[in-house]
Picture 1 (cartoon, rainbow, N blue to C red):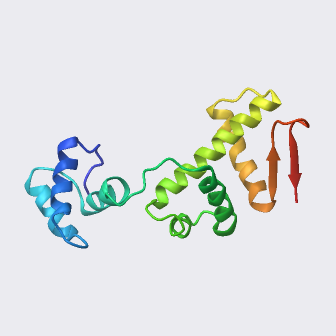
Picture 2: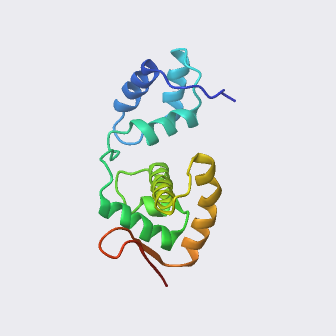
Length: 157
């Protein structure tokens, strides 16, 4: 088993040159063997995951649009935590980046709610209430509007 280590810029460059030269799907066994020959201690899974999650030029690294975030929550309501299924609806986005975006939006919303309610929020507070909020979100259709003339409005159905 190969110990996990951060990837260096040189390792990234070598991986890119090895995978970039292959038309179609790379032969990961050959890529890993060549990485080993060059003195890098990276497993086949590490090479493949690094390429698929970080380096593939076809990945969509654009900022998330508000409409995409809304669609993400709608799809999460349908597919729950099946990030691979949700990723199929967002070409160029990985399942891991979609999961990270979802939980980032949840944390931001919880911080905003704590601020409105006057509750001191820190990472510990957010991590404590996040599962409770998500459990309710998965069971109920909750819509929150903040601001405007009427102040905060909540609709639960």
